[in-house]
Each structure stands twice: as structure tokens, then as C-alpha cells.
Amino acid sequence: MDKTEKFKNRHKFKDRTVRIPINCRGVSVSEVIDKIETVCGINSVYEVTLSTSTVSDILIEKGLEFDEESVRCCYVANKQKVVSIKSLPYYIEDEEITERFEKWGVKIEGEIRQRIDRLTGSADGTRIMNVTFPSGISSLPISIGFTTADGYEYFNVKHNEQNKVCFICLADDHLKTDCPNLKCHQCGKNGHYKRNCHSSQCDTCQYYQCKCDKNKIEITTPTT
Image (cartoon, rainbow, N blue to C red; front, side, top):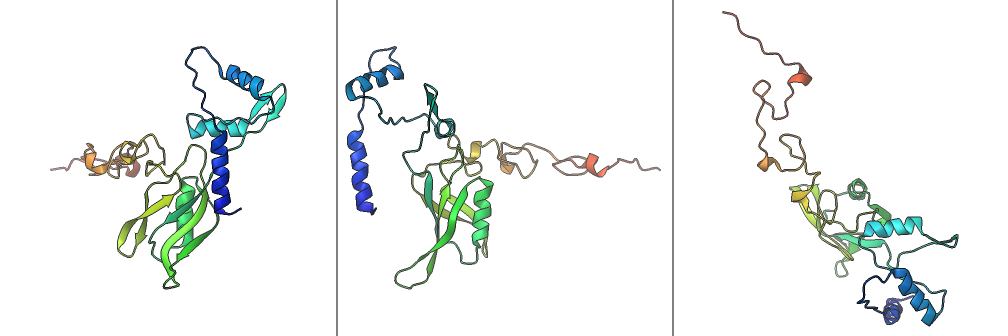
């Protein structure tokens, strides 16, 4: 099926979508469905929009049961997304990208492809891949960092239905500055940057992360 046909089918589904404004209190979902079946007949397919992607994943996993008959639910949209990382240096290996995604639980489906410039016939640095997100994650950050010949650099990341997410845990309810997994490189504790750290050096070992017990440092009083 080509893109034109898919576009037409999308509009067909849109034509089947009906908004039902219920202004009176106390009307349950089952009552609405009963009314629809009375008018339209049974054996219909229903689409529901849930509050979060996590709840959607639970419904897909567990399904529903009606009169001891199991009903398997499925996603309307494809959970697989096409991701592009732009202008990556050629020497950055595909394995490095795969390892970075695996830390987030994001799975790359198939091979990582290189975009070819039509004029020059050579790769332009953009890597393209199909990925599947784990439960509770719906987007990648807008950029990802890699170590290059010029130091640590960030490269733009694009994919369909992309949202602002935390650079550390990919949660969509907070950003990096508020992430509970943010680790201070000075004191080793979570929740703040090094520049905002209020810890002080140990008087004995001179480390911010005291190593006295670990190295068994003892204070001795010099004899006179």
C-alpha cells in the first residue's frame, strides 16, 4: 500500500469517528456502549484514548474479558518509530548508538542505515533506524551526546510524535534539571548538579566523597 492509499484510509477512519458529548452526570461508559449497540447493533469495534501510554500498555498486555470470552486489544498507531540522528561523524560506530539506546530500554529494529546525499552519492552523516520504545517511554530527547575528535558533542535527534523528555530517564513529566536520577559528580548524590552542590571536603582525606573508612585513614598526633 503506497502513501497515498494510507492517507486515504486515514481519512476513512476519521469519518468514522464520532464525538459524544455527555452533559449529564452519572452516565457510565457501559451505558454509552449499550446505547450505541442499540442503535448500531453489536459486534462493533471500539477505540478508546487513555490517560497515559503506561495505562495503554497495561490494557494491551492484559486484554479484556466479556462473558468469559477474552478480547485482545491492539494499538491503532504503529508503536515503532523512525529515528534519525543528524550529522554524526563517520567514525562513530553503529554499536555505540545501539548501546546508548539499550541503556534506555529502546530497541533498534533491523539495521542502522546511512542517508545518502543525492548530489554527491556519499553518506551525509545522518543515521536512520526503526526503534521500539519500552512501556512508559514514548520519545527520545531532542539531542544525544557522543565523544568526537573535538570532544563531547550533541547531535540532533528527530522522530515522529516526538515530545520533550528528560535527557537522563526519558520521562515526560520532568526535565533533566528536576530528574531524581541526576547524579552530582562532586558528592555522588542524586538530585542536583555539581555547581549546585553544598557538600564540603573531608578534613581528613580531603575528598568530597569521604574515603576515610574505605582506605582506613587514621589521624595520628605527632610526638614532640
